[in-house]
Image (cartoon, rainbow, N blue to C red; front, side, top):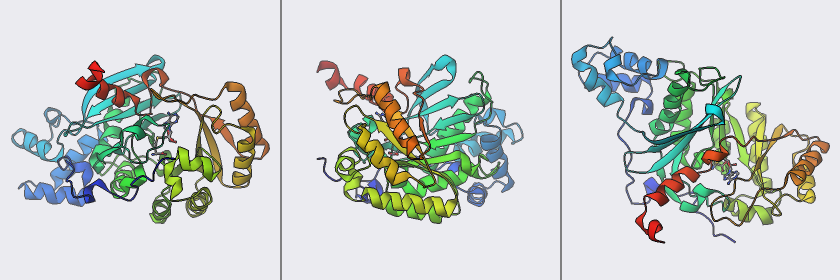
Length: 381
Ligand code: SAH
């Protein structure tokens, strides 16, 4: 059994000062940006102009901000739009419909985001932390531990940057406008609560204050930090909650999602149902199908009994095996039987498509590969 992860410890509070990035306009609401611009000795309305370039037009190059006086463009953009994300690698697959970006942050940390185009929508999957402290043994990000929380703007900028990629027409066969955001990249969003909630507020605020996305099109995925789920329900937001359950029984979930040692299956499901009742939003239950680990018919039946009659939907995720892991994805017939049993119990269930698998989509593997490449010890091992 894995030991209890340090779930309540924010790295900012550990005495070590994490290298947080420079302040960016996406860290602030509009009045905050106006105050900053005024401190620079510029008229307050410049904050709205720069915000409109960034969120409305998806422009970050000061040269293109021709409504600003040439003399102050660089200074305004330098103060409000410092570079937070430097692309290290961009990979595409599925004929360009899936694109993965690996970013280097100002302190050298690596994080990734994925842009996925569908005929009717464009989704970005973003990271909320560099690394992750939740230690789920099947997840590549979980193996390396937590480096630090991302700032609000580092979170928002992933979506804004990739919204710009989508707007350039790069995602063939999809609408040009980013419509959906899922917090399913690296990190545990509810362990970086205040910055993630601030990021959601920027994503949903209408332009020029924010990106103008619909709350219903934002999904926060969590291992199940019960107090944070309850707190999220009390915000005036109705984003979709996804709960990474992965096992219906405490014995197995204690191992697969170690935070279960702190909050048990029954407690986390109670919090999920309260979230659904408060927000009116159907809760997604995420369940990675792991061969001979959590895919037995009796576990499908137990899961069906726990979920029957609730405002929920199950997303089965074929396990994406991580390098060196002893686990594999369930065979297709086993997966089909699992789906059949859940549906027989009256539980709405789908199997997640495995977009981006050739480019190690969405499970922390690209950043891990980059780390290995650049680590001289790994090269000689
Ligand atoms: N910390 C959040 C977000 C993590 S990533 C959470 O745990 O919900 C989003 C989803 O991908 C989670 O359900 C996570 O358990 C799942 N996941 C992680 N590694 C995976 C892998 N190797 N194969 C399949 N799903 C994986």
